[in-house]
Image: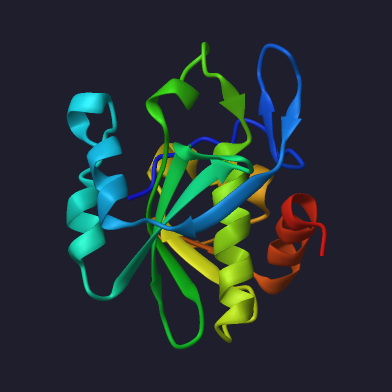
Length: 168
C-alpha cells in the first residue's frame, strides 16, 4: 500500500527554502544505483527487492545536470490496460517538515501517467492507498476511489498531471 503525501504539485521540484525550481529527469534505476538507496542510508523500502522483480520497472527521479543524487524512486508494473504503482518513495532528505525539495511524489506520479500513455494504457494508473490517504489522493491527484484501498487516476487527471510536470 502506498503511503506518500503530495506536498505540492509543482512544475518540477522546488527547493523548499529558496523557492528555486529545478527541472528533473526520470530514468531506470541501474544496479549501481542500488547501493545509494539502502535502509542504512535512510530509505524505508527494500529497493533491491523491487529491482529484481521481473515484472517491475524501477525509476529514479534526479535533477537535470545532477544525476548522481536520487530525489525519489518509483516501482511500477505495466499491465495490459494501465500502469500499477507498487511503491513510491521520496529520498530521506525530502521527507518531513525539513525536506529539501517539494514536488517529488507528484513528479513521480505524473511520470507513471506519462508511462501509461506511452505503453497503451491511456494514462490510467492504479495503486493501493493507505485508508487515511484516500481523500488526500482524490483532492491532490484527481484520483478516484474504487473501493477497498484501490485508487485509479483516469486519462483526464493523468493529462492534467503530465501537463503540470512535463509541459507537453
